[in-house]
Image (cartoon, rainbow, N blue to C red):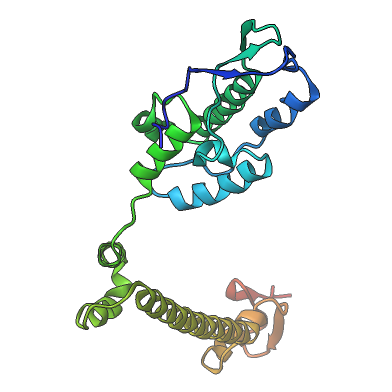
Length: 266
């Protein structure tokens, strides 16, 4: 297979009647459908950690526009020119409209692919001239398969402290598979969620009971404070008077305490 970054520049020759190929603005060479791909901005841009997600989002779009062959090599670049031999033996070299159409499609896809890459990783694959060359470079750089043992080690190292019990259990066993690790972690997380939900429910019940008890105590005086409650209310019941016949006057009891007023001698 030819290098994906090389664009053929040879001339093809055919011995046919001198019939010029249709112009590039012919309906069969319309670019309007393929230009629409520029409006299909991928919602996920490629970074150093999401290659598989990025790939699985872009491929369906390319297939939908019948452009997948450009990046996979099943739509090779045609010759840039074509030679037509007339019935009189005269040869004429003409630009190949198929080449112009292919180039237009490929450059649209190339720019679209670059636009789907995060700027921080774009510099690692910059400088490619065809969409196939860029696609292969991205696959080789970001799509290298990761050994399951390395992946397991990386996942266990990134877990929080609350996973320490399960980490000890997993690392003390024989080598485990990626599927077994996923299943074990999902089971552990499900159990932790159940325990946290139970603790939250108990805490909510305790708080509700405490508030209810506080409300009950606040609504009525306690037995120990009954006398104080009675005396405080008695202060505002108004003065009471009693006549003191022995001392010739009367006494009044109110908020000011015990006052004595001497009745004048008639």
